[in-house]
Figure (tube, rainbow, N blue to C red):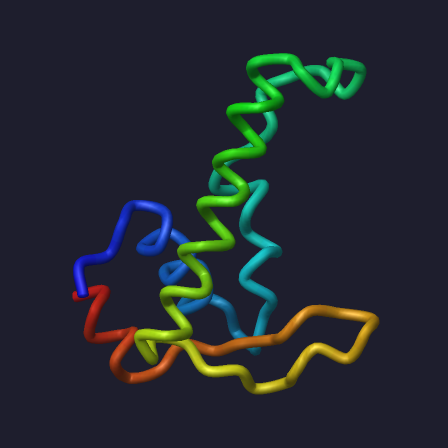
Length: 94
């Protein structure tokens, strides 16, 4: 599997984490908001950022489906799934 830039970035962040993490914890780091909080919902910058966030969710699902991350602690209603990188995920980063 060829990693997209977003998938590679998520995987790198997860691999560097000292303990299991939620992949979504890194979404704002990878694609930070580029608009004012007061921007309307239909602001082009907000809409573009929202599309980036959806792309990051898609990339995180692809990483799981490819076996590059594994769920260590399933979501419990208070927090999302916590994952760690697998050996296959580490190999994909090389």
